[in-house]
Image (cartoon, rainbow, N blue to C red):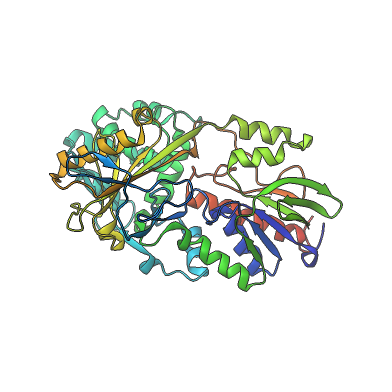
Length: 467
């Protein structure tokens, strides 16, 4: 195996997995070059800049609405915004992601709005964790939850205690709905508590979601320390939160980050791998492929020896995430910075005014598959507008709306899912991404963990004691 002085690593993909690997390698003095096909870093968690005064490229401006509710293609003038391509939040148990943000210059308390664990389905269910040590904070939250009978509160608490007794492990992985049925969780409990948690954590419907992976998340978020269950909502866009800072860190360490530079193919070479782009070819000792599964499969397909890995990737199913941004007049605000709706198209609402000072901007998130996929983006936005009017009495018409649909946002996290290892059968080729082998579903923490693991594999294998 090459020693560390001879390593020269290409990272394909500038999302959270790729930039995590890049930072970890760069800090160890290993030369690294990141190739990102898009103009912005961040992958499926990136900030998308646009102006409501201009049409950028083939992206239409957000619609301006007339008071009568009709739409016009005339954009609201003079506003430059960055909208995330999906509204995400982090949990306090995302230790690797939070550590990495601080390593590259972030400040957790300044960069995030930190909220203690709380679930609020407006007018139907409310749970707030008191400031007690784990797991008592959750048990008291369940016993004090509004919108459930006392029998349902005790049933939910018994379920969590049973899972804790078994170290959050089950012998055979089954669907979340099957596990809840075994433990006699009522329909109301499922609809108000477990289903929203499952959708938020796994982006997969409870009927097909992996119970074991959900338990992994509950284990880390609810059973360690109280602050592990905190919800952290970014005040800045997802590109700046980590990838852009990571790029500056990598460059400071002597590495390279190339945007608008997609990789067309990989070719084996006696020193490792040839990376072919439209700008030309470069040669590296190792390649970490940190792209979306479909792109990874395309790059790997010419390698016959990687057929089993490609089969794993091809077998992955995917789930969407839709985010509907609505710009209301600046005085419009929600009762809380984040809250959910019960049995509506909109699942979670984020008040960007309370979170990031973007007053009047509301983000409605719709995760996983559902009836909303049959609607046009205009129809979906009108459904959300109607829901906000009915739930909160908003009589003002939004100035504009923007729907961002990530139709392959995450892999469907199903029971006993076979996920590819980070190290492939080619010693010089590794895989990073939230879909690779790990305890977590498709989350930022899962992506970061995979990138850091790839960096550790290369560092360990190149050390004098490596094999």
